[in-house]
Length: 373
Ligand SMILES: Cc1ncc(COP(=O)(O)O)c(C=O)c1O
Image (cartoon, rainbow, N blue to C red; front, side, top):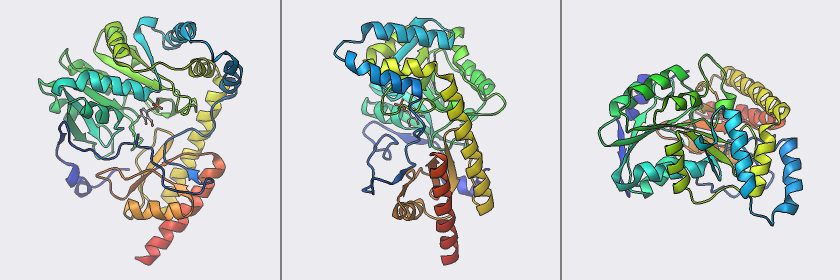
């Protein structure tokens, strides 16, 4: 479902942010409103089913060995990731969450006034960190289907551009673009520009050509693909992610990192990687709940962007602050406002019972609000 042209008028121009400029509170500013501890937390795109059984068992059995540095675990984990990705260990860099690697990439490409292009809205961790490092940011509005507008992003590239960030599927809209379009985009860029493709939610995508572009790294392009154990693996609190890139770029990222994952994260993530039964089950349940939510949105007459992640972005029909406050009063926490979509809400897909509670309250809030107008 798209937006009308008029809705998009406010977003029709490139938005520039310069060093020192404030950008809106990032998705990363995890300041929860005061709430009942039993609140439904549907605002951070976490996966409530995780960690999986293999990761849980590994976390437990690793506690006793936490007095040791994890040097050999890092090597074993990198080897397992390389095998998983069908690449060599030199192309893998681990991070304390993929967020840390986004920060390292923001620093590497943004320092000394480097120009970075990103969509608006998109996940802001890279942009926020890059700004602190002195970057110039160029934000390009999404298209009418809330997807990255690759034509406009390509047109925004200048001789100062150091990197383009593509979040696919995109947080907060949930929309995705095909691998063929990304390949053509990457191939059209000048040699020195890095494309950073954040595939945090790719495991939840369904559709023609919606797949990873990690296979393009072998072509020698300046391309970085990011993955995380925070989403399909349900290990957001454990903090583990990784990047895949050409070995020289992987080395640059590794040198810009501040930390490496703990022994708990390394071992649990490796165990989770092999827990196919858990990952398949998680995906099946989240996709079923996603369909359940969109069916209900249609019934309520609320527009939504095509969801390809573990969350749904939909039009509440009222200012987001009003909607969020009403949900909070019902002990449900939903995502913040993402300009320029002032009435749209991002809600994380919780467990099946949580989804039922959310839908019941959504119906009550939107029906009451329409009745009140
Ligand atoms: C698109 C995207 N990339 C990266 C991250 C950061 O994930 P991590 O927990 O691996 O730092 C998030 C977290 O919500 C995200 O939405």
